[in-house]
Image 1 (cartoon, helix red, strand yellow):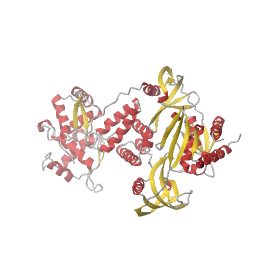
Image 2 (image 1 turned 45 degrees about the vertical axis):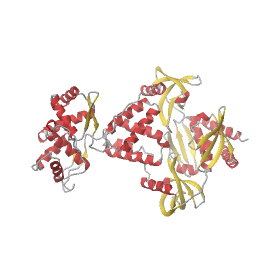
Image 3 (image 1 turned 90 degrees about the horizontal axis):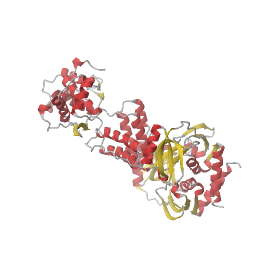
Length: 286
Length: 308
């Protein structure tokens, strides 16, 4: 519960308020004075503000002037992060940059900035990389603004579609689109260019639901995946699974792996395609 | 411990401000009694011997005023003040957690178990720091190792490095526990589940066991075991090979047009067969003959499930 102002130490409070303001954002001296007055209704001179900043510095809080703004570089109070823990955050950030994911990369920059302030040992400030790849940047932008796109492939084909999401699978970026019937996973390597169209997505993403049965040992050990739901567990322990969003080709190839422990139940088009996959594979050995 | 920056001009600092920050830092390290706080402040030349319990109450009130949650010093708290939370703690938003989860899920398959344990500890630490219960839960749900016995994972990793022979109790059926003598070669993920890749002396062949079905390690033999087990080597032709991501132990030995001849090393026949099946009609096994026959049998059995 907040204490009455008469029972607190006013000078300490002012130092802590200054620290709080700098924690929220990096500020130049005029801005710091302005914000202090705005939040706490008290106008201080440069000299007094500098005194509060120096008090924090004396206590080991590393406040540096970067681009003319007071910036908390390191705050050694609180759960400190070890260099190894910081390296894990950096690994995630580097992954976004390597995959040219501008939006995720910016979000990781902000997160890392918050974390390194609390490093056990001072760490260099986060440097943001400018990502040049326009196809992924445009796709991210289209996902955020729900805008339709036109994709131009390396083989000179092109089509308009709705972007759904961007994911990372085994260190590879996957662009997920809705082609009007199903969700399709695309690799940026197959794409020459992505253009944003001046139309909103249709928001009628109703993909086909695939139903399949998993049996025996596989059913006992099966780990339900992101797009899957258990429709039913049969009395013998077999699972009936529904899957809405997985790319059809990728799904059928994954189900092939399970051999005779998997049976595609519906829709009929999926059943037919599975049969064709098996027949075509058998033909290789005829 | 706490370090002061002696380079700061003492005339340009507020000593009462220092007292508040030092108090916050001290309580953040551990719960402290009035005497411990006073002693530290005297040693640091911040207060004199006259520093009283009333002054500390005012200092604590100041910290509470800006949002610190500090308990009273009572018998229950062993006469110490406990800092439960403070406004300078790391705050994570739902969006932050989603970003962490999204990137982690994209790369975890390429990380070793040691590194995954480090990530697991990090997410655990973050969930301890944040206050919002929903975000705590979301952080706990990111790690692929969630719900698994981390201590046991670490012990098994050590066993795999030393090739220790183990006797384990393993749930092979739904309820029946079986004893196996194994030597672990590695730990790894398949379809998001942790598996123990081992030579199973009881059945005298390589196998991979679901970690979550391991009930207990019954015995660890002190001497290490030299095991001799070979990978299954498969050569196959793969059409449209650029559509597929090759695994670590698969290499292209030749290429013609759109077809590559690949040599893959797999832990067991079963794993090899699953991999080959996943390529569908794009793949034709060249060798070994035995695996080719197994594949044909499997495909016939799969086809038999569908009518027409």
